[in-house]
Length: 334
Image (tube, rainbow, N blue to C red; front, side, top):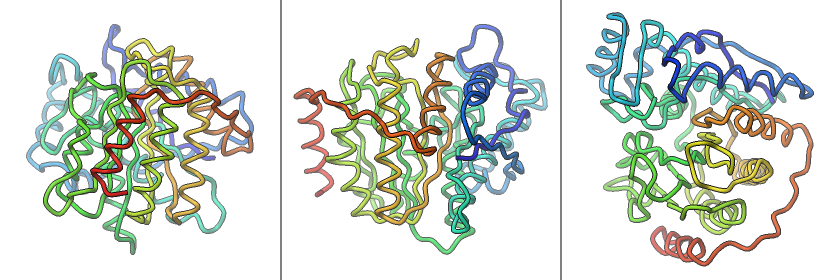
């Protein structure tokens, strides 16, 4: 596996008490130092044009002006400084690099993982929120559609929070499939099971809001029984993972129970699905706020691609998750 990384992303200063800090990337790099075969790649920054392909152009200009004026609190959760503009473009550029690298990977290059910040999946078409300014995965998906001879992209978001921004951007489109498994009732309060897309995008959104305490068995049940059949039906040409690690049982801001091994299982399933469907796979970092569990999660993704076999989950999913999954299958006709 190769990792997209740039020190520019460290310059996004959120202050001493904010959970989304440069230490997140430093922890990931420390964790990967202990692993075999880690390759880093810097990328070009995203252009205003590529960001504006999924965001309102006036909003993009507003972010630039806000940062040029020194930044501050965009909202109570979302903080910027002067350097945030460069970091946000760099983070989006790393995501673009990852999807391009996956699509050009016929020469045997390793699966790419964009390790950037600020994260992106809460950034809606015309606003920043939830620590996010530009929607990195959405920028990458749109760049892939614009620059490569492909027709469809799928994004699977395993962050503990619903990626309302990604859903917002693609909700009425039929060329991007968005799927999210998230903690029910957690910020930002979106991602109900009934939200399956609208107009041309009807049936191209899958939301699995799982109950508090859901863990490996519940996540794997949704993936095996609903997500993979939905991906097979959509038949994407590229698959992007919005990879947050805050559903981990030891993350400080969620109440889910996914283990480090659970991320290995999800990685393995997505790798197999990618190969079966024929959709090149890339990863884009989202959340994860326990430094040790974040570092372990990213390292586990790498180790899975490096040949380590995940330990199977022997637990059974709870009844509520089974009901949610059955309803998902009915709503999406899979």
